[in-house]
Length: 162
Ligand code: GDP
Ligand code: MG
Image (cartoon, rainbow, N blue to C red):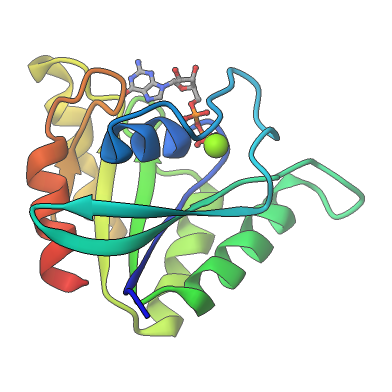
């Protein structure tokens, strides 16, 4: 079976946009409102000659448990089936309590992770991205999934841990 790279992160940070960027086509559903992606969707993907399975996560609807519990639940399931994790944070928002909670789940899993600081659409936003060193997951890769900025370096790092 192909190695599995799972994309996890809070709603609206740009996971599905990043999936489409990696696939080179619009297949994952991007929405301005969270809650659109089905719980987990797998895509056959290829980068720099490596074949792998890319898993997009979502389906976070604030139910009785609340949105944070749903994020944690989905992240935990995705981490379980992943060989490596691509954790996406919205650099324009910064790390939230939910992000910290997901970091704890990643740590507990001991699985390799690459940190994507998304929505860094311009160089002047890279300072915001560098604040995500504070999550303790190593280098935050500044990326604009929307425009493609920085995705090459991010995927290169992801391929090294996959
Ligand atoms: P998901 O819920 O994590 O899958 O997030 P989506 O991929 O659906 O994106 C949520 C919103 O963020 C959409 O309006 C996207 O267009 C926007 N978005 C995603 N990536 C970027 C980015 O790099 N820069 C900016 N400015 N917006 C982005
Ligand atoms: Mg999505």
